[in-house]
Image (cartoon, rainbow, N blue to C red):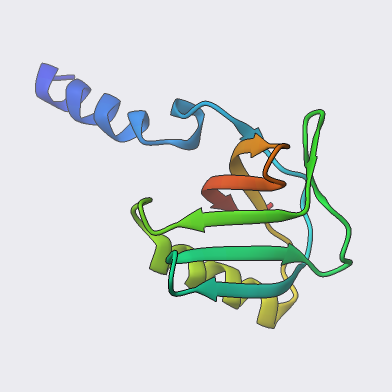
Length: 109
C-alpha cells in the first residue's frame, strides 16, 4: 500500500465517531424534534418520553448545534427514522448540568 493511500485511509478513519471523545446513547425511537432558529440548534426527544442514557449519564434531550458540520444531514436521518419507526442512537458528550447530550454522530443499530 502506498504511503499516500495509507495517509488518506487514516484521514478518513480520523473522522469516525471513535475519534471523538464521548460515548453512544442507548437506542430509542425518536419522539419530538425541535429546531430553534435563534440558536440554530436541533433538539431530539425520545418517543417514550424517558431520558437518553449514555454510560452513567442520563439527560432529557439530545442536541446538535449548527457549529457541527452535517446538521442538515443529521436532521434528515432523524426525521426519516421518526417517520419510519426506526430506532437511533447518538454518539457524543453528556452534560448533566445542562440536561443535554451533545451529539457528534447518529447511528442506526
